[in-house]
Length: 138
Image (cartoon, rainbow, N blue to C red):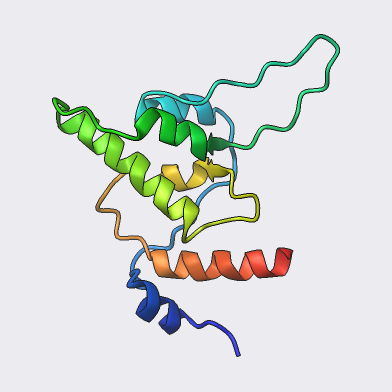
């Protein structure tokens, strides 16, 4: 028995019709692009002298998102409200639909998918494909 696309549609109410959600896995310049979309990005980790630089995931820690975007300012204009809405949706889909085994970071590629709110993507198809990939990687 397996999860089908119809199951995903019925359980999550995500659209299964529309444009495919095909995100590039090229993360070149992701910090600059993140700053253009939401106004800031996490700082690059510091490397001690002679120390080896750890691989940094292309995305933001959930703790960083919560610390910087927990509350939208009351006097916010439409642009700021859209920024906070975009970050909130990114946080939610990274925690639920596209969760990974680490549970620590929101991958950059899902924020990229939220650049336009009325994009008509088939989110249900993407969720099922991601689920299958995570099962294979276990």
